[in-house]
Amino acid sequence: MPTTAALVLGHRGASGYLPEHTLAAYELAARQGADHLELDLVPTRDGVLVARHENDIWGTTDVADHPELAARRRRAVVDGKEVDGVFTEDLTLEELRTVRARERLPALRGTEHDGEWPVPTFAEIIELRARLSDELGRRIGLYVELKHPTHLAAAGLPLEERLLADLEAGGLLGEEGREAVWVQCFEPGSLRTLRERLGSPLRQVLLATAFDDVPADLVAAGERRTYAELLSPEGLRGLEGVLTGVGPSRTMVLPRTPEGALGEPTSLVADAHTAGLVVHAWTFRAENRFLPTPLRSTGPDGSPRPDRQHGDLAAEVRAHLAAGVDGIFTDHPDLVVQAVRDPRAFGG
Image (cartoon, rainbow, N blue to C red; front, side, top):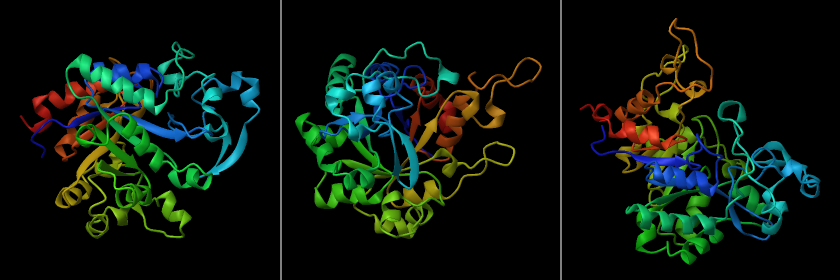
């Protein structure tokens, strides 16, 4: 069991309250107590790193309302999946700046803030992080994900060197960066490139979607090693020196039973801890839709409440902390901060 409070990672900012990957969402996450601001990076056509969960911006911006940009819509295969959208790598930063962010989950979270904020650059987020650290009197960290690095490298836009260049420009490759920055990726090859070819001093986390899935870079290379193999004791030994931690989906830590309840822990946390690695699980959300069935809120008569209503997120968080998780990715940082500070989280 952990003995200190787990890290609270503001997933795409406080994205349960404001449109994800906006400066406003990141600032709210920090003010709600998040230790780190979690963000995903993709490049523009002119090589500027910006924050979007995917390189396709059709669903998270108002690009459809800009005919000159909507005409760029095309089909592409990204990590083996066909996507129909408008892609950041087809737009210059100047073009991207004309669109505004929209809520990804409008049926759950509403649309009242659609159109208020532009897509931020990584450099702007680095500046925001410094300002908030000074204002709040504590170090606010950045937890940075490189999205689709193999796909984007094939398009002539490798991410790793751009990441380090922006961090260096922001003063985050020295001692401060070693304390404030984590880099995460679903592709082990990208993390190996950062560590072994580029000499990155930063803490690095291999993300994982499910035990049976295969990382996109290994698929591209003709390999079929699954995350189960990579995160096994033998697999983790093969990544020694590359990783500081692993970032599994929360169901890889506590699988769901057929009835939708939390099941028994897998060996993942114990295996990672034995290898000297931390475990940061994703993604914890308060809405009923995302919670284990017994933790969803109900009416006075026991009838289910709507998907958008909040249930007992704290109980799900405490269960994962009891399983040994060291960090929590969440759309609702305020609620998770309360949960990790609850003595019950650590058996107190």
